Length: 425
Image 1 (cartoon, rainbow, N blue to C red):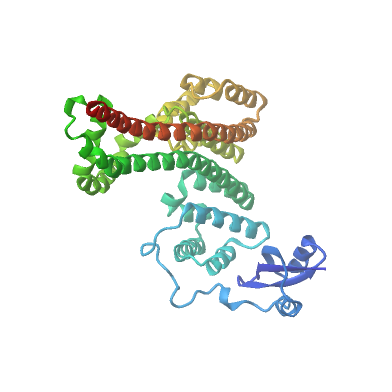
Image 2: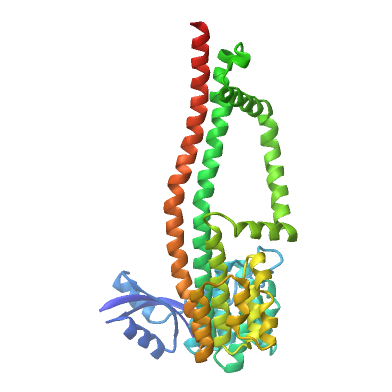
């Protein structure tokens, strides 16, 4: 007999924490449902038996009741930083579990608002609950926070409401968001390590030019043109760093801020996204990650009954790279003219022959949504492998580059010292 710690919702919308004894997880879930509780989480516990008996009696945990404390009641979204992507994913997962367990939507929202420790998330849930209570559908309530959820999320839920499968649609959304998060984290991880190495390289060179090279300048002062040209270049670079170092440090934050603002502008984003696709190692990864996001979004939308033209517009909007968006933007118009999807995307030259064949096969068999999701899974595995290969190659290359630059600085200093010795002798 094992002990399981549970968190569950009552029919009245309250939450209970406690422990239950059972042979396995399935038996524990059955016991909770027989008590009229809706399980939210169930984990193995090693708590003392006395505590388990008290908790399993079902005493409600008032510290997590649906009513908020007076200081937290009706928090406003305007006064707090808004919910993050991780909050949306967690909310989608929890709501899917509660609805699949049979809890009504309004009670599920009330329970979640009482459980969360984040004031912005609580404010969002309270606002959604208030909208649902006035008779609006869940998708209409979410539409008031369009900037947070986006077209894909809202349209997919609207299709789920129309088909009567809101809980299943939320489960699909949670899976979709998790996959997108994995892709995003993979790309960020792939780009973070080279960026750190590059910063370390620049700092190392700056330290050598600012502190090491100036120690030899007095030795080279009287040499003039007799110094080898690498040494003269090195001394000039050191003079620039030491003479304008304070100005460079002061101007660096201003330059970074100005650069960030420029890159975040419309023209800056177009230039940045276009250049990202031409990176020697990571350009292909960035492209494949966005196309995977497009395929998964389109397949999920089509599988839930969204018309293909509308689904294409929404799936294109989920892509991060503006250059790729512009390239694939004519596809919905081609579909309106009666072209097949495989033929419409071929002129973009973005999809591999394998991807085009999978799309064509999906259209011929009437299972385009399933084939697009399968294509997304194939692409995800390819992206993971490409990231591993890129990092395996990039790490030694950057180390060699850093070592070469430092070795070049040391060689220029040694050449100057040897020139001084030759003149003395």
